[in-house]
Length: 412
Image (cartoon, rainbow, N blue to C red; front, side):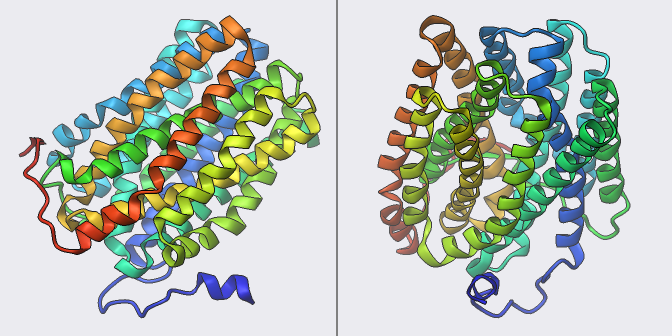
């Protein structure tokens, strides 16, 4: 009962707002479900695919992952292209691009083909996420933004769990392990998400009026997204790879770990969103990074794979605290600038996405996995320190200090 009480919105919804899973929120949720199912399949089989089929070395993997994050720097494309489309139409196009890249994985046999497929997929989903977050923040009331973001994240986890279950059923239940078929299935799911958005009637969220804005007043958001991107890409690039490369974890075990992680996420993401609304962003993020530091040290220096399986699950669950970063932006940003600021934040985030996998791969190649994960622990400490000042930033914003003029702005 305590769990479900935490999930109930704290205040009544404003008149005219969309509640529950109705209207535009349902459209966003269904599109997210389709995309995350597709990416869940891709993420699930990718570590084994690159290690067992392509024979990728750690430094090559780091280079590929760095290249994968380059499109994250190109959210300026969102500003250049989205002004010609309604948000739902442009979001559908991003899912079609993702589907194209996933289909290319099915034809991949060399390192350079892997790079091409990876870049195309990356272009699609990196342009999708700023629009998704902006839609949810616009729908939600100020008192429940983190709760609504948590609900969307729960949909994300459910889709990933469904993807893991599908792969496990095919590999373990039917003895079927065909990587091109897995990638083709993922491409079809992404196309289905695009159809959901294209079938939506109404204004589709309108067009972006300020496609890309950087403001000094939002510097705390940019720094938080940079640090979160660094932490996320350390995990995504090297945690699963370490389990496969060092401990020879088979595909079925990796699928089981990912499935358990997503069950945990389904249960905890709405709860974390509600807790962030209650605790505030500062306390939530400080707790998150206080836990991240020992987890990275465990990856690098704890030689017990079964314990590391638990570390991997807990590490994945902590990503729910990233909701606090978008919630923090909702408290300091002008409402009309949320989509453009989220897009700009995506660019900042992926500067880390380009640098961290590349540098982490070099550290691994030079001094082993311990050096890579020690670097991740240091990033966690830096994030913990910076998160301690968020309440002061929000207090200044609430006091009515006017934000400075845009230092960079791309307009229609």
